Length: 112
Image: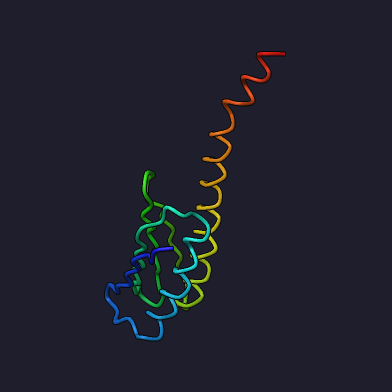
C-alpha cells in the first residue's frame, strides 16, 4: 500500500513537533477505512482560548471529506476528528458497495 501524504499546518499557532507527529500518526490510520484516500490535511487553529482542528481528506473519484472539532485540547480534537472521519469514510464505502450490488438485486426480482 502506498503512503498517503499528510500535512499538518497551524493557523495563528505554532504546531509543536509532538502535536504534529500525533496528528500524522492518527491520520495515517484513515486509509484503512477507504483505500482511495490520497492526501490528508490537518489544520490546527487557535480561536481565543479554544483549539480548532479541521481535517480534510482528499480521495480519488469523490468529494473531499471534511470534519472540524473545537475544544481546549488539540490532541483530544484530533482523536474526535479521526473517529468522525472513520465514520464518514466507512459510510461512503458502504454506500459504494451497496450501490454496485443494487443492479443485480433489481434484475433478480424482475425475473421472478
